[in-house]
Length: 130
Image (cartoon, rainbow, N blue to C red; front, top):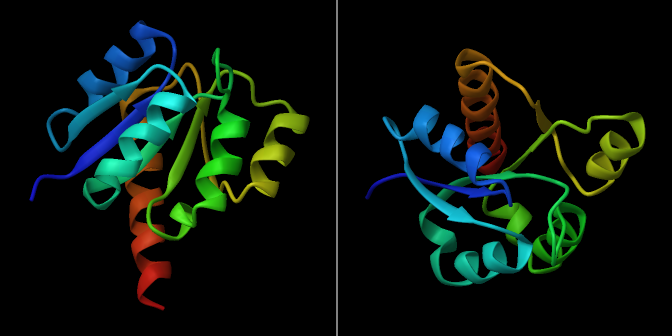
């Protein structure tokens, strides 16, 4: 089975950049907002290795997505990495309250993104086994 990463971002340039960085190791699924992401996950949850989530999006932002994601128990099945240029204290605290352990600040380098994403997946799998 191939490994999938769900990229949730309303900015097509950001989605394309992440896809370019990750397509060697993963199949990339894109969603433009939290509503699309929840719909995709409802059908494909078992195939997704990680969710890369922007916070500021129309229709359903990243915070509302996280609330609904967590309420379905999906936070026990797949890690979420927040990818945002807005990493002020308030947003980081809100993310932490919603269970986010990994945050990737835009702009980022390929190496930084790779380290954060691989660490999040490995950390999640380690927690799953214990």
